Image (cartoon, rainbow, N blue to C red; front, side, top):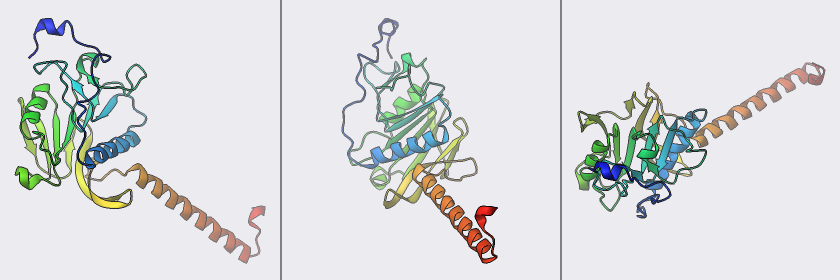
Length: 238
């Protein structure tokens, strides 16, 4: 833990890096958090009290050095402005966010094991992150875990929650996995769900649904016009 003297001289966002500069070694570490952000932006587009960070450093005072960030693959904070001073964030710095801790953190396990089940779990618990999600589609057998695990902080320690999807009432969303087509290929991905377990559509799916609806409307209009003309009625005179 940092001492009081250190707290008096905490660095600003201009002094701190925006990530740990470690390259990801699996495409899904970028694809999944971005997909979750896209869906969330679609659901909460009229709200400005949330922020979803992707591969962004979280600087905090619960470790040994406030200049050393923890960098999840994705995280969600509620009760903070989506834009900070009308600008995009380069990092998430707790002492510049009224010490509002992310309520949700996502880690995606890749070929290079990153302490998702031990060191990072301890760090997030100490930080006070309520929900911790570990997605491990390729190396779960190696790590002796399941592909998808959701934990909730209880009395300072994480307790595993069962189910898929898992409802998170404090967020008002569920999180789960589903095999689906996304940008021309099919694989299992993470999605947001409602309280009844219904998956929220991606922007791509919503756009497709709207195109299909518009096409059906066009076809109905054409059929009505043809019927009227067969009855000797000019549709333009109606």
